[in-house]
Image (cartoon, helix red, strand yellow):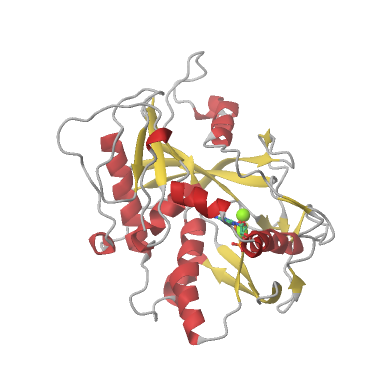
Length: 358
Ligand code: A3P
Ligand code: MG
Ligand code: MG
């Protein structure tokens, strides 16, 4: 089920003459050599506090504290009385990344500190999460997406627009689903400390406004990218490698009891985990496997570099090269589409096989 663009969300209307170019999402078309993807380099970070205020520093960084293998963490604890949930109705778009760019423009600008805005040495600015969705598109049969792009001084800014389907899904969430979304954050609280020398505080409040985000620079084929992504925590060992190699992504997943469950985990979960962490160069995912009652029954580490080996035994499984080649071709496609360099000109494109529009 692919989403359709919402006409009301268009900012500006332009009409393109001639046939509309298109891009297929069929995975067979992207099975070629892995494209060049440069080692992502962290060029900065920022933090969002308990009230979602922006800070141009790493104050919200947390430190990973390895749990026992069978910790029996109760992820339901605190849902009713120690949970402050971020307001999902506030659409932040690229705002925090743009704040970071403004706060760091002297080190980013190629033409020195001019009074007027100078050009950035990047082709694309976006959130890591948007790129993750692009990477998984050839394999995603359920959730569609809608992306808006604008060209400003040669740089393309890509931001997500909520689809009608996503909005309905959010409105019709069950209480069970709502609670299960808390479980992932509760797992983070059990495994993260605020300081290098302190321990996790499972008695505290879970506030999902708080975030630490890395800003990375990399290149996919001929696309120079600047993106930001939320990072759960880092290795607390002072001898750990520099960011992003010291970062740890935390995940929860349903306990695996049958071969079918293992296969689904490889096919669907590991695809999303791989895409999310591979992009910013986060080397490992620590997974808490939970039962139906929200108890973490075991914890396992998945090095990102080992995931492609892990899935090799699955028949007809996803391939990293397909993900990266699709993303690369999509970005080339966007460069062709979003020609007009004007902040009020926005191209909106969805993942359905249909003409795009401005
Ligand atoms: P899980 O690890 O259980 O998925 P992230 O893993 O990206 O750091 O996100 C932390 C938690 O936020 C997730 O824990 C999940 O509970 C919640 N979450 C993330 N993305 C979500 C989404 N698209 N919809 C609902 N919940 C989401
Ligand atoms: Mg996170
Ligand atoms: Mg996580």
